[in-house]
Amino acid sequence: MSEERARLTVAAVIALLALVVGVVLGRTTKHQAPSTAAVRVVDGIPLGVQDTPAGALAAADNYVAIASQTVEQNPGVFARLVAQAYAPSARAATLAQADAVRAADTTDVANYAHGGRAVAVIAARRLDTYSPGRATVTTWLGGVVWGPGLPAPSQSWNLVDTTLAWQAGQWVVVSSAAESTPAPVPSVVIVNGPNNQTAAFDQRLAGMTAPFYGTG
Image (cartoon, rainbow, N blue to C red; front, side, top):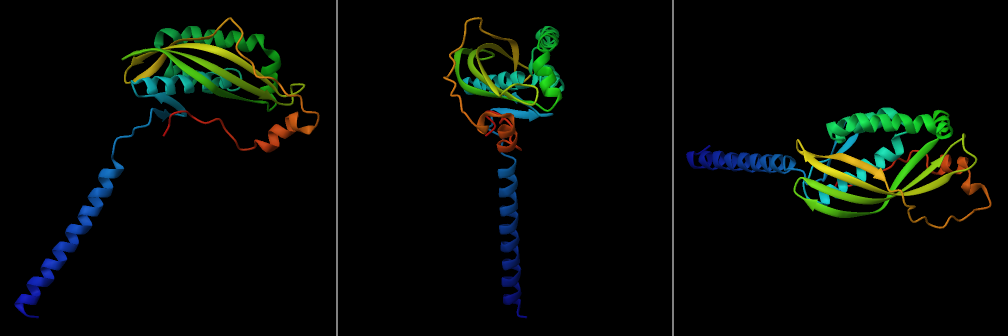
């Protein structure tokens, strides 16, 4: 091989290596780009991690929905939610209230123990106040419950007032409670047939789970 051809070959190899390194670095940089998601899931709990109006709404959506569908159905998940997403000053009282709710609602608790299910839906919400580090949200919350321990599947609706504070890089619940005044309730259509029976819910919704809000 001539000296000139050798120099050209070395130059070509160097150019190829530079191209490969550039592509790898580009992919690595892209992969390491900071997430813009409003929530971060930790141990199965979506935590609000953006101190913005949209971030506060996403946090409230998740906290209200998960609390509603786990307080009786899955006390273990509810306890994790309280430990990770509630202000330390609110945790003991919240867990005590949850114990009281379960003790009073023996029908639903027995239904869940025999395989009943509940799904919460955030139908709408409003950011009432926001300033960096503090927010209040009103949520129109719907819930659907079914299972072998109930005469038929049922729905319920509430307006929930939630106060959030920004602590240690995330939103936490300072207080959250249903309003005492009745919430708007959609008309219930009675279906004469198998579609409003527990078996229809179990079969048609098999494998479905409630989504997290603001994850992408």
